[in-house]
Length: 422
Image (cartoon, rainbow, N blue to C red):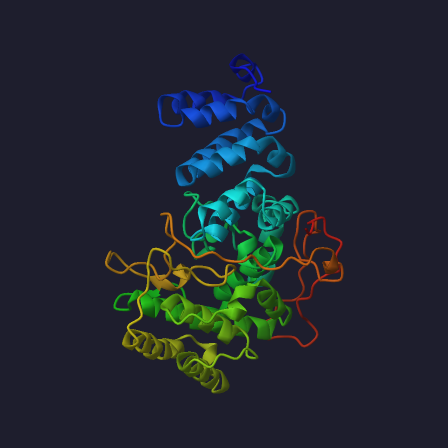
């Protein structure tokens, strides 16, 4: 049954909706305004007043990217909001856009019509998770524990709905900014990703140089240095706290183990994974060369400082240039979702011709269709739970010396957390 306009404008109508509908009516969003007006009465008691603006902006952004998808979401909005928060709805929408980009339009529409297994699976996953903002206190304590000093942890919002996937940002002055857009396509559940992201940032905080001179090094060189430095920092950190090595491994997406592309993005993803997992086999000559160089530096004790890596990275980046590979600065991002964008490492000065090493673009991108990682459902009862989730006790501090102690390690805890699993 259609809800009359007078009902939609009743005293229960949120103020944000009344302001937004006035703008939609005079633009090209009149049809969207009519569709949402039919849902306002039911949603007014379900969506908090503070979340209405974010919800309406999300629907407007989806309409700009995929109008038919927006109408499908609005038609099912009451049912979706019974299961999801606004942030959960945004992550579910992002999953659909990224999963079916490059596929036929029918597959995308089936997702937003909730007529596909992928859509239902993603919906159940998002309904079982908590928003990043609610985990910030626990993540802040974990960052302090691992870094050995205060390191602020904040949320970084993706301002454009259908943009390149975000990565964490680590800044010496302001701490760690975590993305609020992790989806099922990023590999692990969000608690595992966030835990690994904090640990990776702490590894940089303790072991990586800050704001190296970046002039004269091309973006491809920045990316290769970043890959080697990520591996170096994690290796050093895992030697100090062996348990964190397992956190990093659990946060890697399934796709990383199967990557076989030979373009720049594919080879760099293969490099990241090859350096993270010594047991992984990759026969590509460039990967073999990179692993050999990294292993030699490690065995010679040269990984304690970062300088030796830059020479190796320069040779490897030159090899990529000789292969005539191109780097797309608009879509490139660090392959592992838990790793930061490596801007922590570089001081690019005022030279506008030197772009950041990892571009977090706010423009729509084209991505090939992907299959989400498998969800094991009920068979995860015996799997170790994340260390920090909503409701967990604050972590305690054990002695943090300058050398590793054989009787100390970072370990998980039995699953008693309120952070649910789908």
